[in-house]
Image (cartoon, rainbow, N blue to C red; front, side, top):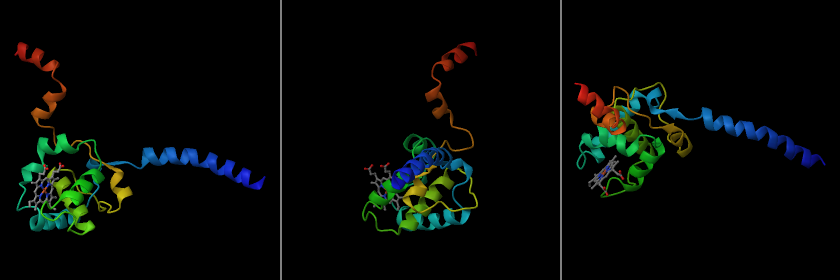
Amino acid sequence: MISIRILFVSGMALIPAVGLAQDAGERPVSTGVFSEAQAARGLGAYRTSCESCHAKSEYTGDKFKVAWVSRTAFDLFDVIRSQMPEDNPGSLERQEYVDIVAYIFSLNAYPAGSAELPADDDGLKKVRIDNPPGGAPAAARSGRRLTPHPRIGFRQ
Ligand code: HEC
């Protein structure tokens, strides 16, 4: 009898708690999810381990948006950690990979905040990559608004 009541009560309490955690726990990158110091560390690691093969343009602008917007910081972290550097995947410290993700965010003009990007899987999964601030380049906008554009064009 007692154990049934406990199960019932904790079950009732868990349902709303899980719902809240999913809604409130997610943070868009544009709200400041890494610190300036972290991005600076990431730049250092990037120079040592990535720059020899990659230009910054590979992680910025439309290339970044097409590949990563709507995914999570964990997705970006996981690809880099499991595949890069191409000649020695997984060879950096976990924290260095996380710092590089912060650096890539800063390259894309997301603002720094007061706290660091978390290094644990769960924390990274709660960080959602939204559109970089500062106005989308025309190419990205036209992709989504193909229909209105011809009409504007005819009028001008
Ligand atoms: C020895 C050369 C080399 C080094 C060093 C290197 N990369 Fe790469 N990287 C590549 C190549 C080649 C590709 C393309 C692989 C492919 O498309 O299959 C790539 C692809 C990527 C991608 C795209 C992966 C995807 O699936 O979208 C990312 C992100 C990336 N590298 C990040 C990094 C980071 C961060 C570092 C430093 C930790 C790094 N790379 C170091 C050669 C390198």
